Length: 204
Image (tube, rainbow, N blue to C red; front, side, top):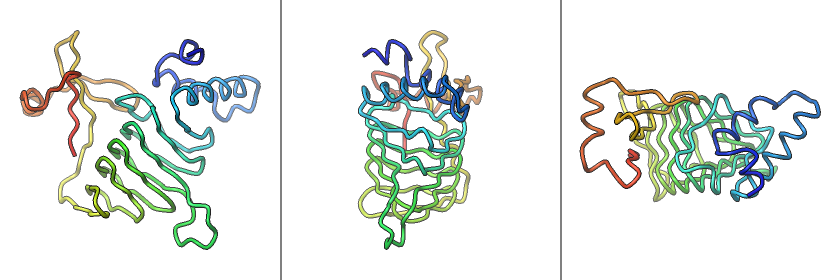
């Protein structure tokens, strides 16, 4: 509770981490302590040394999210709750090492990406899927064994939410919420079948 009062939400946590990571001074040490408390309160572990470009989108906060210190994650990634991006440290394993994720990767709740695998750009990893081999660009991975469906078109993987104040659809882009202007997309998002109590739009 104390860390949440000091830091605020997951976006503020991320800004604190980005501001002081790599500074090698007392401010970085304080930031590491504060973020460690925050992660502990959220049952999460996002290693300070993990290489993550930009600010990921955490639609439901960072509850239960684990990211290994050796992991590398590109820009505009969306990570839902209970996701693990973890290393394999058995020296005799063919997949020893940590995952490398490209840009615009969308990871559903409970998914696991384990070991020295490369996940390409614009990949969608379905809820509870387990990734243990390389995934090419513009592919969808679903649970139940690792089934991969590669698309001929680029998957944008934008995370959309309905802004009640402005009555508009917005999407998360590199740490900021931007208003959608494409009428066709807005029409699709506005269909009642895509609205839940929080007006989130999430699809694999």
